[in-house]
Image 1 (tube, rainbow, N blue to C red):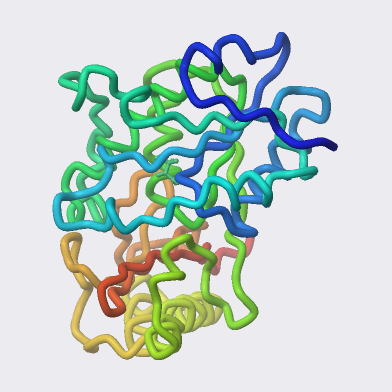
Image 2: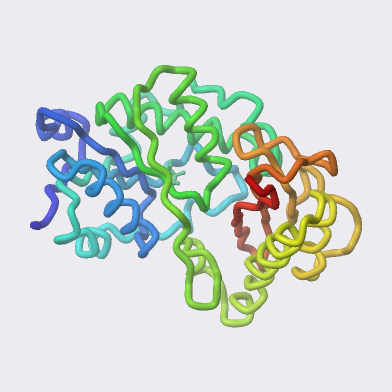
Length: 291
Ligand code: PAF
């Protein structure tokens, strides 16, 4: 497997698209092993197809007080990382290439899924995601696209958009890659100081505790409480749909919180923690249903 071809603008991308199946792996760069898992999944999905990695730090999905400027941009290192692992093409456009008319006046509404949890805490975030993903879908004309399960709400929004707006993709979800101590890999982990890195472990600790409680047959409220306690959050009720730090048991497709009428069917325990200036999100599947 050789080095992928780099294209920097839309017309070069159009000229580099090959006949046959194409799988898109959309990223904001600062690639880590979790991203490489996405590329590997794309290659497995289409052994002879074209695997296209997009690298674009999308201004539209960052709020005015968020880390758009600080977000790591490491294209040279990313290209090295992508050598020989099965990517054929890298599309790394500029902001001007992606948004030639400036901020788009027409955007893609992520619907109700875009209003809760991360959507409530980061207003406009999912509109930015769906808009850029839709544009990248139009430009790469892929038959399949790969996304990580770590961003579970993003994945749910994209699945819904794929269905509702006829993107025609097969959406491939790839399990979260974790560090040895359980922290989910994320490009934002590099912001953490050593002390913050320790504090961040409260997130996987909470998820583990919640999953254990679910294994023991606990209801959704107990699962949430177990997660909150293990993470050292105040023992009170749910963080709520707009709390910056939360653990919640939700329906994986709608992200609606489940209560104790939950019958143990597969659900997601989602969590978010702010550590210093960094917000981290993570999730795990929970179920106690005996099929
Ligand atoms: O998950 C990401 O890296 C981004 O949200 C995505 C899907 C590439 C859109 O900018």
